[in-house]
Image (cartoon, rainbow, N blue to C red; front, top):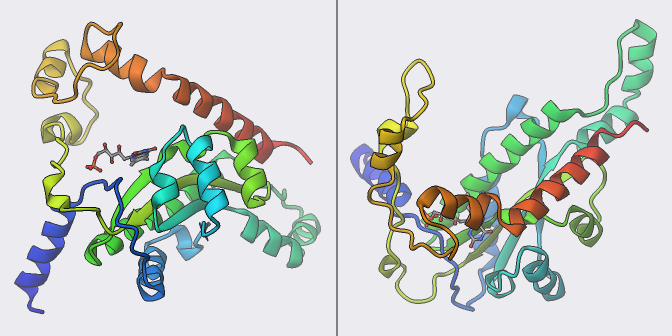
Length: 262
Ligand SMILES: Cc1cc2nc3c(=O)[nH]c(=O)nc-3n(C[C@H](O)[C@H](O)[C@H](O)COP(=O)(O)O)c2cc1C
């Protein structure tokens, strides 16, 4: 393929991606699944340490349970491919144990530390970048996808469901499948104007006027009956909604486990 075609096709793919929540029941071939996972694995990772793992959720009973534990989202059960992306520091700390790193640290007078907050954030970066690579790879195969952020809820249940050790955190779940019907009929979601998202050299807080302009074409219907404006709607419907409160509780519990002293 020549340079121009490659550029056009890549940009088109990125510009036309949209979240797909209704799937054709047609299963994905093993070749397609492997291509998606290899795409994920080509993502950059900090120090090339690949501080993430992926669990392919194939058992229908697990998918059915995820519907409930991820805030009642039935499309999870109907997705032909479901991948769970884990921020994973367990692999490295298991290897450090085998490699007697703690003993070596003691010998040379260096403090041996177990994973901390920064390690979790870095592992989450790796996992999420790999996740987005899988989304784009799937898109190239004509396969749609939907992130499920609610996997961060119910930490204790997910931990037990997937046998997650202490230094593994489920950061995102992605449903994949061929779109049911013509995906181009699903309207592309809007984005706020570039000037409200990209600043140059320093951060810029938005004024009341800026917010008015930023939200002037907001297409989302007012669905929270108590809300009288967009701010109240965003808070009551999303950031302060019950699922967000559960997510905050769950992530706090996961952090406590991650950081606990032995
Ligand atoms: C971190 C993250 C979490 C998300 N969680 C969910 C979810 O739990 N359920 C869902 O149906 N869509 C979820 N989405 C999809 C978003 O709703 C969607 O990306 C957004 O509305 C923009 O639409 P678009 O992807 O079609 O451009 C999530 C997306 C991201 C990036």
